[in-house]
Length: 325
Image (cartoon, rainbow, N blue to C red; front, side, top):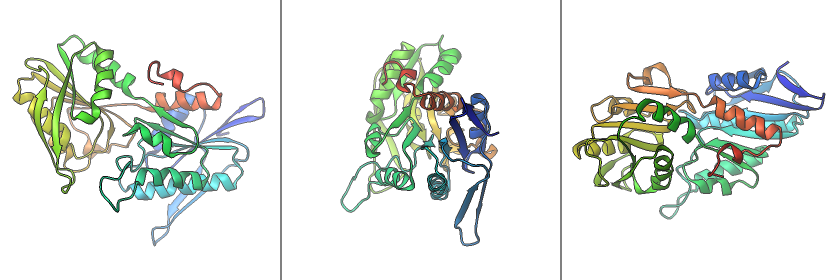
């Protein structure tokens, strides 16, 4: 069977959309179960159809879906899966969205704009979700948009342990690529026992994805600089910051980020001379054409599996991250 059964009563059902099936398979293997067989396809006009091939009545369901391009298709598919579970009498439904969709649109910058991240949580709730699980939300306030439990998982321990293993014997400086990421960068610095530096940047509000790095706060000369961020989209921010660090005498620039969105021309930019190594998680699928020599991809499956197990067993998820609850 594709479900864990305890005492013939409590059952866990793991379900996956089509965006990143390998991640769901990795999570299932760690949990010692299988992914529920699902039929999913698109009609000629683009409408999506889903149907579960096993009974899900009374289960504790976890619907894993990543949200790469084309993001709106995968959102709709996950919503339909949640609705199908609700109508098939699942006992509890948890949306597992490792990279939360529309997370960058968490507030109004100007008049007549939507708060799209709030709309996403409303849609999940309307479809029937009881709980949301995500990794490294772009802004913590998104947790308050959903009227129910939100498990905010941290990839930092996994990434930081890898960085310490690879470059811990060098003179490390943790660098925030902008003022908005200083708090997270400070946690990195504490964990690695490294000093902190900050890049001041200015973004043109009328031109998306255009960033120029400005002054540097902190000493980076001759040091291995670790740029940390929650995501890399077109890599404009990261590469501009890396170039500024090299200009100020940094010996090496390592980039660590959770979500590898890698919209064009990210791979081309990251493959240049400004960045020496890139470490990311596989919260999003990274096809072969977007992998490059400097890239290391770490698995997020153990983190998600631990959180699913904790929720299923009614244990505390926050205890997985001491000091960050």
